[in-house]
Length: 256
Image 1 (cartoon, helix red, strand yellow):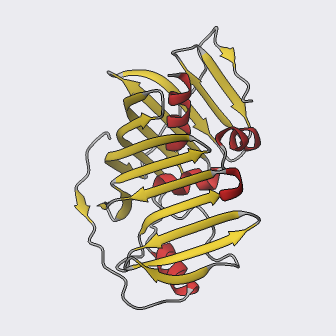
Image 2: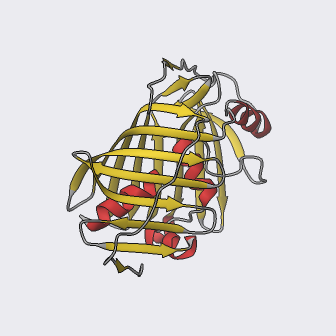
């Protein structure tokens, strides 16, 4: 169970009064557009905010175990993310993520971790940093779409951007109404590693868009991990606290 909680925390790593939600309509892409047009449209759909407070649920499954938990995500944009996982209302794990480090603890085994993204990326089998985690949680493309090397095309009635570099393949799919991200993926065929993220729908919260569900599939050689996240409510621009402290007596864990 320990690894399941840890990976669920890292995958999550996006209310006081539930806001009115509106399901966002999407459209099919019918005419090809340039990389610049698609990138501009996607970034234009991203509203600005100071803080976000998101509640939802997360289910985790791998070859050996499965678990369903409730989650609470607090984001101070570009500065820190606090993720709490609860079982029957009891906090079982927390993670605090900043641009420089990742911290988490989990109660089942009484362990905690503090480290940078290098060891974490190596352990999970995919390159991570703070910006990518924040974008994944918010339903945004993890990579900078204005960077050189992307190729644009139409596929499955969606706009597709893809890029290959140094043995890594990246792909992004967008609908045509607001250029909302529907799928993104990173693969390293030579290492048998694949990360696929899908967004089945989006909702509008006080003028800001968030995905309704996030589906994550990670393949590392012959191992498969599946994480499904459902957002149920969100508020923005409130004054939030980010309480995090490791309980006494926990053992520090090193990621091999």
